[in-house]
Image (cartoon, rainbow, N blue to C red; front, side, top):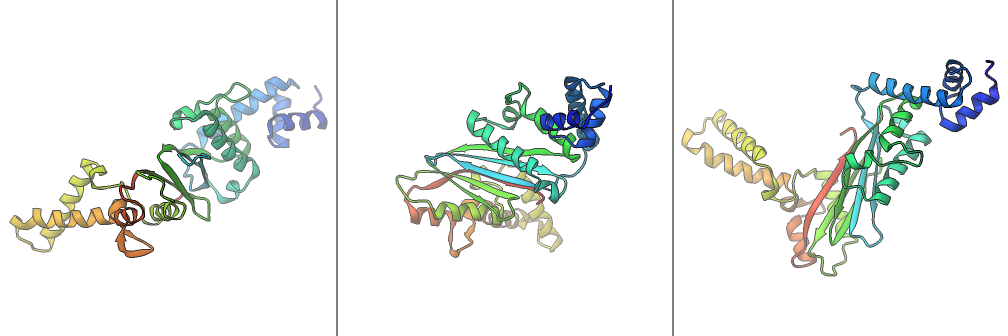
Length: 278
């Protein structure tokens, strides 16, 4: 069967695939459009499998805060190269993923990827299809959904780093400035937990052992190693837990003190930080 330019263009409009890919698929399908669409979808699966181990260090981070300010969602869609991150189809996919997250209030990444689309396929299948069209690995590297009395957000200027911070104990306080400042603090200082009690036991044990080994290498007495290591652990807490960090805009205040100064009882419930290529 002869494949016309009109046929190729029709398939391209249906799928968004390139002209040559459309012509090849139609030729293989002997002009059957439905079969050609399936061939293009399988092409996406093949490309995805071939590039599965490739590094994704570019992409977009999007955040959304509900109109009432009590819920926030953050999405990180990654690709291999910067030019692809600027392609309209990639940006549209990122926007669609966020729209799906908001509309369905997906609780986690797995649920979001399983969200059915208008054509009956899942969001994950649509991502795979675009992989075939673009020819690069694409990956939803992270999705988070948080709630609080107030949720504040920040997206860095390169759109590759974003933060959500959920607060509790707000009691009417205006967090428009402080909330953004603390979200920026998370992006800049990269805390691993909200407070000391939120650091997992394995991390604490590792820090203590590292502290002991450092003290031992400095020639400290064996009987003093535990005490020295615990002192270093306190330094670790000050550097690595949000509430105990120095406020980057005013080193005389910790984040905990800043919150207390803003509103008695105000604190951070949780934060989520997504960074691509960092």
